[in-house]
Length: 333
Image (cartoon, rainbow, N blue to C red; front, side, top):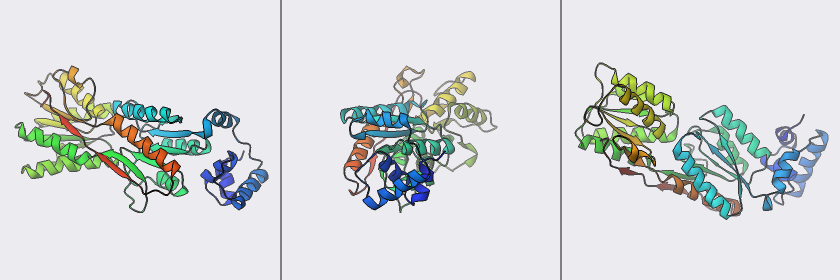
């Protein structure tokens, strides 16, 4: 059975253009429309009735896709809440896809969203050279990258994120000023742009205060709770364990705390910990967690505002919006 990719290939156009023809969008030239319609006829393509029903229930088509890397992460839940708040106010409906940091899964969801002829997408790229996202941008579909940008300087795309390097620097500087010298870093997936930037901030702080970089206490995980448990266990059971740990996201922080408590270590007397990503229940931990706070809800709001502007004016200049990350000092360091 033919799909939109087959139609696009035969007609020599993008999948986005096929979607626009199928959904009777006015933003397609007559000659292009004829080529697509001819390919549809020759391949006997039948558009999804479910998709058409969905589109018909949303005024002017107003349908957006949101691709979230990990719905279990409270940070992304707050981002999604910010997106939904502004979407609702502007009469947009959302299709939310959780790809669990899986590149293949992300690619399938992108194809699905394009087949449903969404008007635009908010995405957190799998990595800094995410070819799938780059191809979608180049196809002309409005895109806003959230939390993570793209390395390719030739790709113009709107981006909303925080100053990850500065946030990590503030966290590690605070650990150093609190008297700790052997500071480990548990990173998320190293291919993720934000993980790299946080490592840069960690190294920058150590360099500023003359602390030698020890690569044996820099651990790379997969941004999950499980990796926090495993890697903190490796660190704390090593011959020369750290006296403090800086964690790369809130799920890693939870994993590290689980290990610390199981080992019966006192925080911060025997091991200090500072996390990147503050959580609404950080004050309820024992002791309350010192953490870098990202304005997640604000990130979501700004991202969808930029996306709506991009849909309304495709030719406007792209924006890279970098928001501040603040260190919230409590009792864990």
